[in-house]
Image (cartoon, rainbow, N blue to C red; front, side):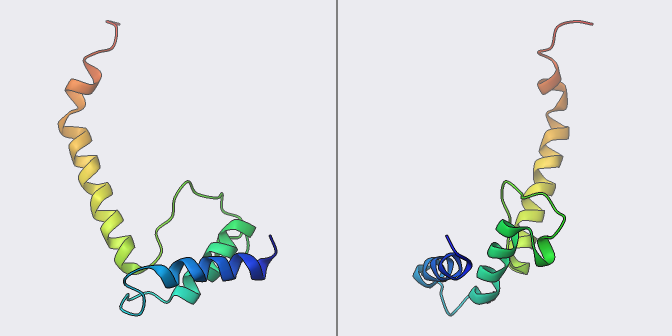
Length: 88
């Protein structure tokens, strides 16, 4: 798939999102970033392709909060999680 086709496909998907026009993020910038990530260029140059990515400050804050909560929950349940190992 050429760059233009990929970019256009991404914008089409973004246009179909119910929030389109009301979101804080710029769909054009998001599409450009996805292309850069896939191609390993621009801001993504030299970085491994992630299994998932959040785009936009609002999404970043939601993901960060969820990750922090997951780490707290992990520590709270550490004893239970580690209790099923064989005795050392």
